[in-house]
Length: 572
Image (cartoon, rainbow, N blue to C red; front, side, top):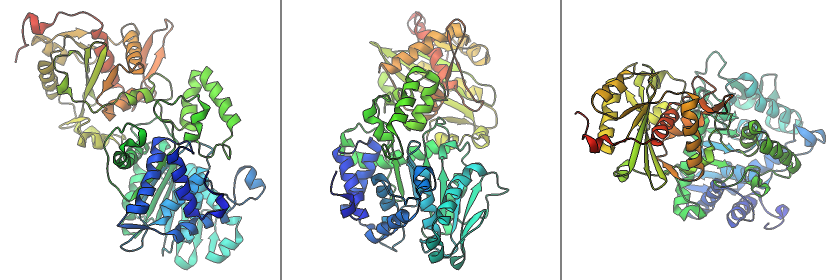
């Protein structure tokens, strides 16, 4: 793999890593390939930014001057030896500068990698470098998390790292206290900070180090750090995390944004051999790496494990992965943990119903107008006054399915909910906000009726246990309403059929992120009769859209005479 690493500068090793990833000599997923291609493109084509080898060399030399604080290397008091992927990350983060003023280019960093890949070590190095070597007066560096214990993990590692290097402390005037690390000459400090603190206001962070972002139930910490950096000339928010299951959280939101940034590079290079899915955005201030499996990879295949574990053979041991993979293959409840923690794959709500990789593969940029003339059924899950109302529109032709969804919610719920995604989903049209603090049932009924007149469903499935008003009104107006009570007896087969058509590739959906989140929240409860029933593990984990889909599938499996042919359109 290239020249002997000892004969190359760090910048040359970073470039070599990128080239080896793109050539296939290093096994990597499409997101890592896109990040590598982006770096190589910028080396020859960037105009507003320049790559400063001295800056890159300095941060990498700093890292390798530090000692390990955990594991067998710590017991042997060994210095850190950066792996190629870590060199690439540090060189990109600190080597790219703005031509205009020489300040750092990247302001936000998102690194997603499986456990045991020394990610906390990398964060601790970054924290200490920002504190002592970044030339910032009055630098405030925070190891931030939702809980104090989590926030102290990176801080404690950085503190121990500093204690092991008295030469570092002497040279930079670093003082080590119980709850802070300080540089008196520049009036700078590093502290642990959590959402449990009395207030997050009044901060002026030069650096925010966030470990395990997927564990953040709210977006408070991220938003405070992001908005508080405005007075700094080159602030850095750096998050490293493993995958999780909460697709409505801040972590998945930031991940999704990085995918859009990397899509810009993929579009310019014909996908680098991949099908490019989703939109793209240009953001020269955002850097990230996602080490995960590609769509279609089998998680039990050892040949793809390096994609999620760039430290495989170093701090990640093959025998350990094999042991956990074997357990996951035989114990269904162990699969989500293996996928998220050891293969860095986002899964559903901690219990397997839908294969979310297969679901996301089924997403397409499709338009509902293109399916006029296909047979279709509707399923509606009708809400209480303050919850979601959801519609699933399922088209069928020749064994192929196309799914479109609509989701209504009271406007006040968007601002009052802990779900950090609602506002963005509403702005982008993925959910529909109705005025006020209760659901506008008249609007919901009107819009469902308009869609029904347009696409002529043979049946509209609903559960009378939630709302009888809209179904009764629509039935009185001539719409083909079919009662389907949400019991295991009625929903088990539709759930199984839905899963089968997704896994077989027979269905394509409109990639609505709210629906993806709801599907990911579905937990399949199996009763004594081996019947499936959809449930959820948390109150705030909505599944209404998925239930609407099951109802659409349920009435799809029955034969109904089309009212559109027998008696014409329902009443206007």
